[in-house]
Length: 260
Image: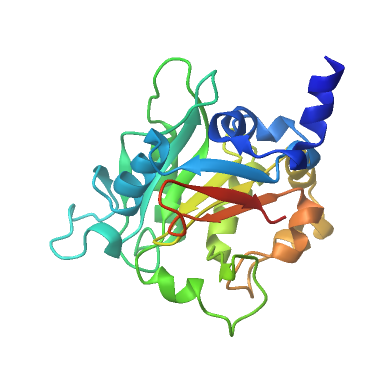
């Protein structure tokens, strides 16, 4: 029992499996940041990766449309963003919902307003999952032109994996923290799939405790009004854990590395 507890407290000495990772991110809101591993192995042959790459990035499984006109006659597939629900079962197996939301533009999931996007997010929260599955967040895609941002070395300092930077937007960060700040603590994970990379922003027990505080200090930590990217410098203070891995670098598997 003691040895098992020690292993869990010092995760950097081993590479975790995706299922073991699923066991903790599905309850990340009840865990401290120091229990999260530093490396997670992801198989490109896994059902999870195939579902997010084909269903979410390529948009092959789209069933929910952001456009009021329905399907797009021209912009399809990797040209637009998509979103699906993340959940895990008792064994830690991670799944994505069969329902996949399709956005309207290259820049955002909807071309109308943040309020409209929130409506779609609330709709996705109501999607039923198989018995025994625990919802813990959502995953969305960035379109194929995101490759340019991945290799942009002239912009502000941003976390990188093998010299390829992560390409979260400030609004993606807002999608993680805003619902928690408003009291919806079931979704503690935002995941992102791009042509190059898979990444996770994970809120922890520390994150929830801080966001519950109604004060100017908390507001300053999550303020994105003048930012193009998330306030990475504040992630450690907020207890947010950041992972990223480049899925194009290996044929069969790749490593998610903990960056923060």
